[in-house]
Length: 110
Image (cartoon, rainbow, N blue to C red; front, top):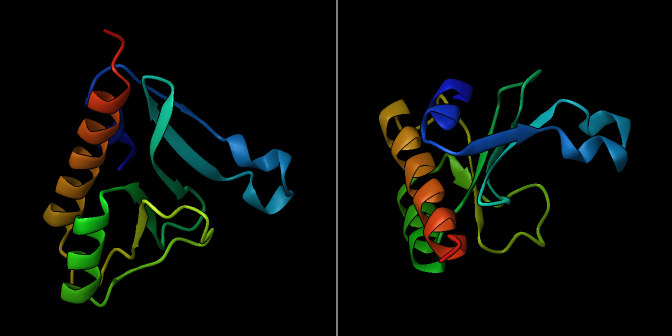
C-alpha cells in the first residue's frame, strides 16, 4: 500500500498523529498538494482510511461489509476499509487512486 501511494506522484508521507498520543505513532499518512488522502497503521495493517465523496461513501457502505466509518468520526468525507474482507485488493487500490485524484484536483495550485 505504501508503494502504491508513493507511486502516484508528488506524494509525501509522515506520521503526524503521534503528537496526540503515543499509540498513534505508527499511523502513516500520505499527502498530495499538502492535504491527506490516505492513512493506515504500519504496525497493524487492519484498515486503510481514504478520502472520498459523500455519494461514493454511501454506495460503498451499502455494497461492502468491510467498509465502515473511520476511527475519528469527525472525518466525514473519509471511509475505512478493512483489507481481507469482501472488498478485494484491486478495489481497495482503486479507491486509494481515486482518493489521490480527488484531493490532488481539489487542491492543485493553479
